[in-house]
Image (cartoon, rainbow, N blue to C red; front, top):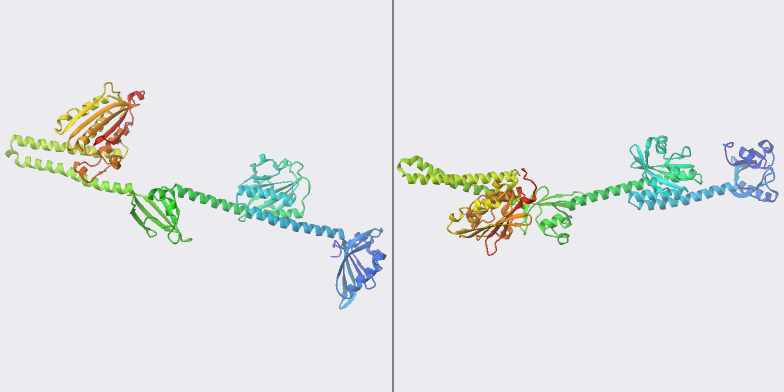
Length: 607
């Protein structure tokens, strides 16, 4: 221990003769052990002899003394030393003195080093707090790179991310911005070398010229620190030195900063993940077609998405802080509720156990309810429409079968005529059902070709005046009406259905007017009647399947609610359209639009 001590150890007996003179004493004072043992060491200047003796007396009477003083070397130079003197005891008796000498300058250096370390550690605390206050990952990494140079005195710094078997430079300080984003193979990097050592920091000064860090002029040393997140290596801090050489203190600070950097990065990653998750939730919440509401533990609305406002006609500011405007089902159950606006909602709920909040999801089922009602009406109507002609056909057929010989020729002809008419009605009904099913499945097939619409209108209206003595028919078609593109047979069906409706829904008679004219790139055909008319809310609904828009007078006209659905489907399949409008003076105007043939260069079959 004496031989390896860095301090000069001199042991004296009570007469101040040297008992021990170690190697450090030889180096400090210049005399060898052989020269000093058994004699008084000539190291105390004459003017300090009294002080020296007084110190020894204080030590002898109890205690240890440490003082800064002067001592002589063998070459006559004066040394500024710190001396720690304690008693050498044998039992309870003082047998001599142990004097430990070290240069006061070394003591000052150590003291200054400790003070600097303390200042840097305090600064590290401030830096860590500053880094942790930032939650954007890129900003955190930039703060780390800047703080790294401040704490270690490095000339530049950077941070690299470990991405599987690659490294990516994501942050730099006092380095060209162009190198940001550079990647390299992990297996040939300093980070891999550090990982294989099992340590968290290291110094490297060899083979730096080929590295991207060599952009720093005069680079001679790199200090490397490993940053871990969740116990796994996440990245590394690079401190680059070109003007000074780092020591143990710099490595210690780098290691501390790397540890705190891992925590700060972990916080930023967690924050960004939380922000990302909240953004996803917000996007789903705002973009959902379902109405979504969140209620607190007291049942008050705290969140109300745009779809909820649209479905209920209650904006968020009208419901937040109060109860929702519909009854709440128990968790796991469903409530179907009709709003005052007439809209039907299916409402379900789920409770969040951790917060006590309740999430309400509700969707518009008005169309489904109306379709369900329409289908019920369709079944009832179809049954009625089928039962009447079938009953009549069966009755007349039974009569002919059982009473053929008893009936006159006129009676037999009348019965057969009735059966024929009712069979024709059944055929038309079956045609409507078949066309309706094909239209619903988007399977209507039309052929797009050029044809004379005026000719089809003439054919459809020919003979109409003699069908009813209550109605007058007027047809206005200008000369030179342009040919149109579409399916002539499908157009016959459309025109026939529009004219049939005009007669059917004007039971008291009146004018049935058919008019056509070119308009822009199309030809327009209107069929006007002076009948019962269509209420404004129903002018679009009448083109839906199975829709019976009125349970009163309109139902007495019969039908299964497919005619206008088929008409619009056939018109649109040809590239045209059909719409319903009020007729000036009362009644209904049905407007058919088809494309002019001049708009298409060739007649092409389409499916």
